[in-house]
Length: 249
Image (cartoon, rainbow, N blue to C red; front, side):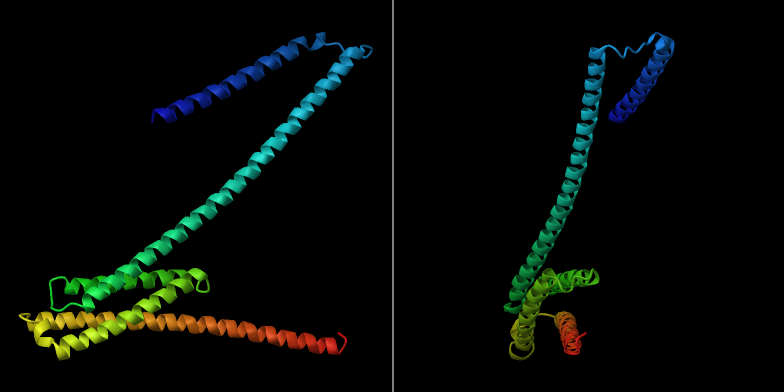
């Protein structure tokens, strides 16, 4: 608060001083205007006047160049700052995505290799689904920004597809093992309600994986379709140009 008060008072003092100085100079000029005489026959005074004018003009010119350079450098720094922020945001996006993918892989391994139902089993399934939802949201945000053809979108989509396909195979095998082959040992001393809840979470996670696979496949198809349409338009335009050139047009 004190800093703002000091700045405000300094601003008032500066403007007040400039006003007093202008008024004093004006009064002095009006009072002594009649005492000014110009002697054209004095070569020294004329040369000094011309030199003074040149120095003043040079000073104004130097100031203008310096001020222009400052504006240019400021614009460059602003552009550089914007690019730097974009790179930081992109790096943070990639880092967060990679961390989520690694956590999904590690948690998926813990779930699929579990020998017996434990207190963390359902929470691990919920955690995987939550992380998948976060990655899906990242893809959707990039898609809405019109960046579905960017390398960042394609890289994340490819990595996510690899992870969910591997996770789907692990969960299907794990579900078969705990429901058919080793039901008695995996859900030993577990109530039927908890067993149904665990299986419901597995099915819910498999549904989420299916949704992500369909979404990625749809985007892949759309991008291929756009590329094919662009290629067809280019081929058509080349054919038309060739026909026109044959007719001498």
